Image (cartoon, rainbow, N blue to C red; front, side, top):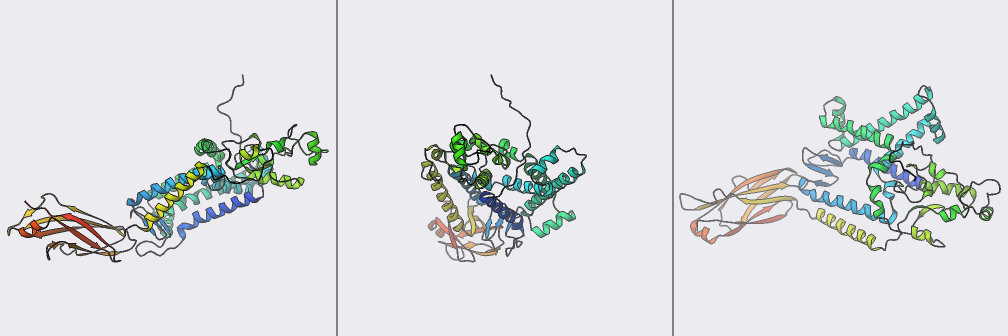
Length: 469
């Protein structure tokens, strides 16, 4: 009986560079992702009561500034809904195109790509890097090239961590404070921790993060359908009855290979060499495959050199591959699962956009002070007291006017707070008292507070007036 090792020594994955449409797309996403991440804290955005920064997470001020939107802790529902939308979108994309998110957009993929590019720049292409791995550390060339690589990784990791910290304050001021030793301890701790974890994830662990740490690769099979479009090797075309064979003398023409029972795969192993997770796509669909398409570029390159049709390795579905004559690959979006994900996404996004667009410019609450519930004054009149809380979430300084409906003139006493000026994100509590004669008190059971902001928005809060009867 064959035994299987549960633990095995990791073999370092040293991917080869390749050119092609999927590599160009990955490079474009990498450039765009890095530009957004590293430049966004420096993007100016005029604000009347906050630093001119497009995106800033103002923890002391208890608000998140994202372009023209100010998010407060009471808007946590938006965050919960956004996370749920992200999860459903991931499921939707998986049902359509497998782990394409992992292959092109995941942070782990982007930073690993950047680190591999640095490794190639310092150490050369795959054969040169493999040669350096075999050399002893006493080699001066290895020390310089590998040492330069590790130093570059460390600098990029530190830059990544520092940029993350800059989102939590005014970037120019916070950067100056960090380098002059005046920043909070949390800034230094966060920078150190993220520098270390970025270096480990993108430089040391790499494919192990996708294979053993990230749970997505483990439950993706539950979301795959036979119609899911993902990277496949066309074994029927590539193997032939006699299996794959190198393109040696007498086996360079497709007709000669077909006569000998061999398929189009020339067993060059280029698809394995370019794979960032080190798998052989010819072994079939695997949980560690991140659907990055680099093996497609590699195989297409060989097919072009041989003068044969592309598509030996391609994005396709199992259903299409099983056909006697596979047709063109296409997205299968008409399944009940995909449609369900799509409808859920549209509804949740629509509600989120609607809720953001119709949020009130201020929050308010009126509570009656119940200890005591009412007071009988010396002249026989009855007084009730109320507490009005206003929170400005408009994004700028606002002035609020407080009045009442359903009360006789002069019954409402607000002290000097008929008008209150509140800074954005701040709250004010106004003490109000209502004093009525016994006859008016008997006739007044309910009334309303009317609150108006400087933009003309008005809210009406109902209240009750209590008497001894």
